[in-house]
Image (cartoon, rainbow, N blue to C red):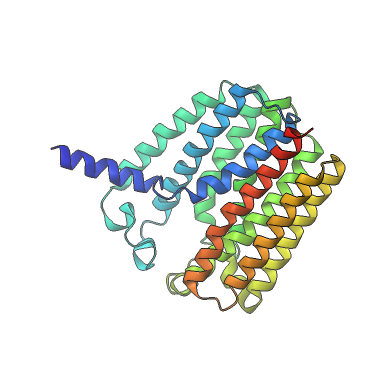
Length: 289
């Protein structure tokens, strides 16, 4: 009985992708950076705690609804065929039940924040639910994912300050560009399988220009982040962080040069360090003031 229970818990854990937290980190670093910028280096501890927990839960919920939408397709993709829904380890109604429970917990958390943040949260959950289905009709669903993955930024500013200033949208745009870049790397891993089953991705849409477009989005990310730094008069630590981020982007370009799936996946994973560099650059600036 205990073994069966442990097996079910493990299956739910993998369904929520808690065994692979890379996506959580890619969502968390921009959200925390936004909180620090919105609060001039001193975020409200309650808001910080809610966002930290919320990021983990919402990323888990995003994975659940994504796997629910792709449950009949994932079995045909080498990298995803062993996922709990695709393999039949978990039934669709169980996944929806877990999605509902986690969603209610997230809703309870966001209700502790101001009205504007709650309103933005409603938009966020709609975007999260819609995204998995965009892979059926959008040529580059990564561009929609960029909106979903960046939505925590205006929410962070709203929660901390009660408004969403222009600066928040500059950071939103930077994160959108970065998300499109690294998720295109992710799409390069599955390109051949995606072509077979009819899933669309920017890696397919960009074709032989995939590396060039990834580079364009990476450069745009750095330019927007530099503009934010100049506007806020962020110091040398911030600029050093951007330099590290730029170096990591160059390293990623080297990894994806031959378009080998494993190295493309390594490039995708490397973006965790790029996000951490940005976060530490922001925190470092305020810590040394």
